[in-house]
Image (cartoon, rainbow, N blue to C red; front, side, top):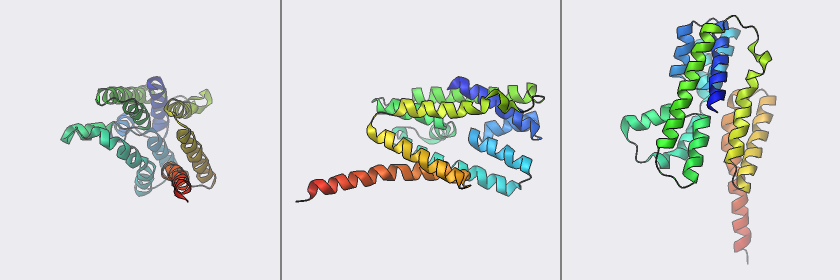
Length: 217
């Protein structure tokens, strides 16, 4: 996952430079936003001539999934206060969430594992961005090397290592189906957020039906 972050970060640096951003602006984006999907979307919108307001709203919608991840991690961060909690929130990504929640599921309570992995991921992403922005501006169509699939492969790996029960499989498949349907319908900006909110409801609905059957006379 750290290697993937380095590779995809470099790809973002290349695309950001080709979109007209300077090295400083590309690097600053990774430092301030630190959200790959949102950053790629932002430079794509920038290339298409979108307004700053449209770009900002798109980034906000894409990153709303962080609310779901943060809510899941909140009970494990109860001992963190003030700036420490803000720092843990700043380095929250899909990858760090997956690794962190897996760590807590195994019964661990300390935050060192999550913080160390997330900080290393941040470093890899930002180093990759700088390398791509500085040395890759002349590369045409970096997607032809298949690097655009690296982040997809990373997410598949996250799901694979996170599945522990049948309910996890149902949630993953439901989320994939909902996200794919929304993307095909042209609502890719909110696909992940809606899929992440809808998928757990399927499990809750199924459990409620099981409980209702058990209490029936």
